[in-house]
Length: 98
Image 1 (cartoon, rainbow, N blue to C red):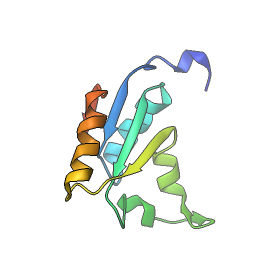
Image 2: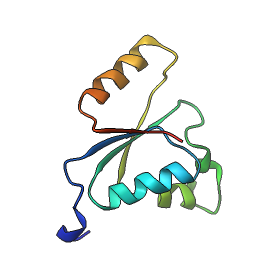
Image 3: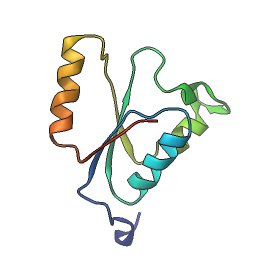
Image 4: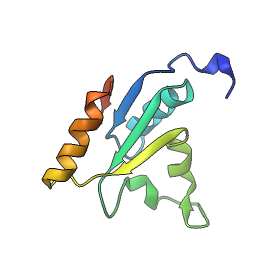
């Protein structure tokens, strides 16, 4: 991505969205330089991981919707998972969910 596409550099987003609408929005923010951290639940992750077509067991729709993002799996049902999210939120500017 060229330097002109980095208008949102320095903005950190915790992205709890899944399937299509939310990930599409955070994808655009990431494309413009935001540091997007996608938070997924353990086991199944984002539902779009199940959508084909697949290349080397990777869902192409999932890969496209989540490009330029970092990802973490966190179990919010236990205290350590909640603590991780609280620590991440200290440096986040935006929290997204759909």
